Image (cartoon, rainbow, N blue to C red; front, side, top):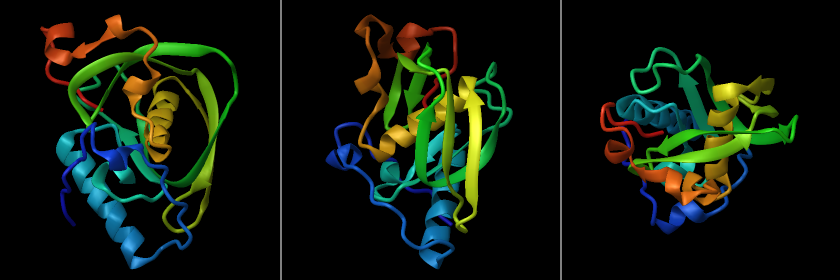
Length: 177
């Protein structure tokens, strides 16, 4: 469909709580998901939330295959997740680097739950229920935070681990979400 501009940190729309999707498999929802997919692919992102393109609905997409920006990450199946609910399965937290298409050119060390269960629906209303850990769990938490108006810098506990990607990792290619 179309590559949409990604809102950047500072835009107040990124701080709003997204609305619940009430109807599935509509032309509008399907078009939104195509636009999100096109935008994520064009930016080589690991995921994208509808609020990042200015749509205040509880819709996220994510998925990682072979991505030069994430050479060491395990594969995450491409997923459309609508009205997600997350349930941590442990209190164990893992710290790792994150970036975001809405915070371009920066990275930060973010604590996330090591394992979680997520539930929701796909765009057609089919139920999704997965238990995940590692990078998959991190991506889901990051994208679902956008639905609550939370950007990853809000989760950073030590700002000595937050900075511009080219300064933090001078020998690597640029990385965002």
